[in-house]
Amino acid sequence: MTIYVKLPAQSFRGVSGLNEMLLGAQSRHFTDEEYARYLPMLPDQQHRVDAARDLMSHEEMIVKRTVLEIMQIYPYQKFHVRAPEKCIRDVTYISIYSTHAMLVNDTQWYKDKLLYWFRTMLQSFYFPPMAADKAALNKQPQISAEAAKMPEHVASIYDTYSRLRLNYQQVLKPESWQLLDEPLQVALDVLTLTH
Image 1 (cartoon, rainbow, N blue to C red):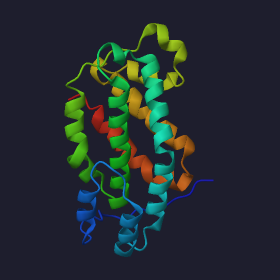
Image 2: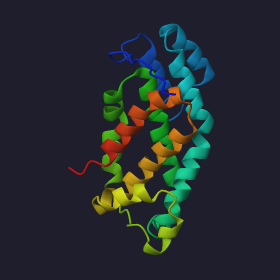
Image 3: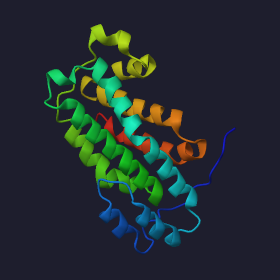
């Protein structure tokens, strides 16, 4: 069964106090106390808080699964010190800020706040192609097939964040996924821009 949630037409960032909450929650999810402050500001948005909590309850498992899948098929460890830890950190930031973007209903803010900077930073590093001898370990060959069509410097980025989206889609409640799909897709789109 598909559940449709009508999204508001504009960002909530103009709501008094919300920008201060975002500043206080940089690089982390909102706390229970912050959600308790969010709801009086936006009383019709309980479904967004529920979606954020749904994502948070799965985040550690999903991020680790995504990174493990990527580390099994791309030889990051040969080129980057502490590659798994750094990848977990980076993927977690995308998860957190996707949640923030959903909570404030503002993917443009998300692009401006994090994604354009993060894309520039990521694309300044060397990302190796998929290891040919690891193809059998690939649990999502259709994603990697799409990634293989891309320029080498974005292929593994596409592979990583496509897997993150798919892994979340498989565990989130349908109503949560509907709210979080857009910011996760926006992250994938911006991080894999080639121009």
